[in-house]
Length: 385
Image 1: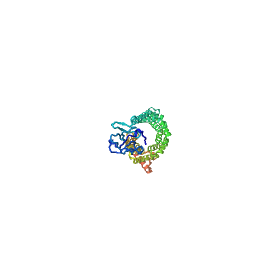
Image 2: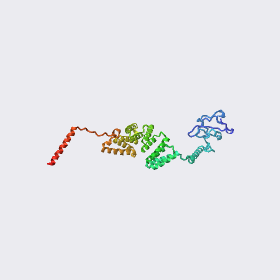
Image 3: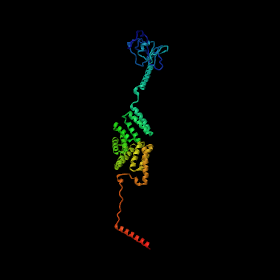
């Protein structure tokens, strides 16, 4: 229980929980347990009632604001420790803040918060550690390189990718893009080096294995290319493009039968993917192009053109589809002029059979000779006559 000074114990205090207009109503019970209250009881005779209980001061009394405590004829220092955030209304209706003589707590907290934000912002902006990291620098170069590749400015993109790998030597994505840029500029040996670096950093980067196979195939090293495609397929068995390129390398090495089987498998996988994910297939130009390439290799040029048209309908600037369609149309025109061109090259059709020799009997030969001799005699007699 709070002890009050003796000089202040004779001042009565009354409270009310009226929150609407804060007007005292006569006839209410005064506060119990407060020194000098009309009950005549001392501090220890009772205690404050529960929060919200009603007790109204007699006429002429003062009020304490909306928190439910109203004071009258009482030295403020006595009750202030109990209710530090109340407002006093004296009989002259002069409003006195309970925190008078002190700083406004809300304004003080807001000021400290603003100051802390300013200090933190300055620390972030001017701290030496806020400089770009190597990975961030590499990402910026990669973005610029990608933009240049879209514009087909391959040599400029190559410079950006080289700057990216110089900044972040362990960025497998940057090395892979550098290799692609080397391929687009015809530097296949440099591309091989870049893709080998990718694999060194990330052995499970299937796209890098496929790109390595493409670079090796362009250099004429088809056996090594096949091994690279096999590694890509070992990571992703449904990599239709890697499977297609493996078939092409097999065909270049003379294994036409194995190549034909792979082309059939490419078509089967492409159709399966289209049936399983029809919503994605309508936006995947590459899967249609892979199917078109396989159909074209099998000599099914009309079907290939249809697949290429579907790919170009999705992406009109897809170069592989454009090139494949052009080649398929040329093959169709050639096949119309020479029907044998419409037959795909296989081991069975690569060696044509020898012409068949029809046997002739001896009687036929003698008859032909007699007929020729008769004609000769007749022409001789005509000349003499």
